[in-house]
Every structure is written in C-alpha cells, then in structure tokens.
Length: 124
Image (cartoon, rainbow, N blue to C red; front, side):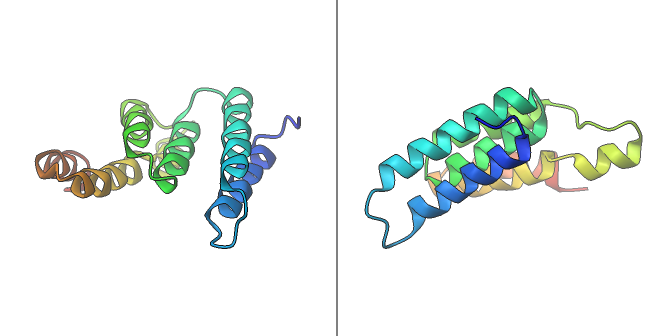
C-alpha cells in the first residue's frame, strides 16, 4: 500500500467513479476498494479538515447522508491548517462543509437545520 496521501485519495476517487458508472458490473467491490483507500488515506494524512471533508464527500456521493453529516460536522469543529491567516483562509473547508450539509438537510426535509447552517456559516 502506498504511503502518499494524494495517491491514496486519487485511488479512492477513481474507485468511486468506477462504482458510479452506469455500466459497472460489480459496484460493491469498487465501493469497498474506495473506502479502503480512504481509510488508508486518513491513516497517512492524519487528523485534519481536509481528510474529514474528503471522507464526507465520498459518503455524500454514495448517498450515505447520515455518515456524511458526521464527517462534515467534524470539519466544522476543526480549525484550518496554515502558518499565516492567508494560508488558513485558503485551506478552510468549513463553508464548503456547511454548504454540503445544507444540501443534505434540505434533501432530508430538515429545513430548520439547513437554515441554521446558512445563518451560522454562510451569511456574512
């Protein structure tokens, strides 16, 4: 197994793409491969916004909203990485996570939580 986080993420995304292809013969093995590479990516990359956002995005793509919500909420509780304020603002994924949570909450009919996310994270 490679120890390069970018390579692991790209492999996971590739297998997610294979699983989503309409002519895919066996989707479940591709999903399992993708989740395996995501798990290894998390181990190699460590505990940060980027990792949890990417895991949430994968779960969101797989229509696993309840799991995606968990990881998007983890992103909201974490500070971005960076040495300067500019670096932190460029790597901060909280708004992206909040926007995706709004989409999930609206799909689930939870308009109060969607509104809360908008007011808390997306309105300036």
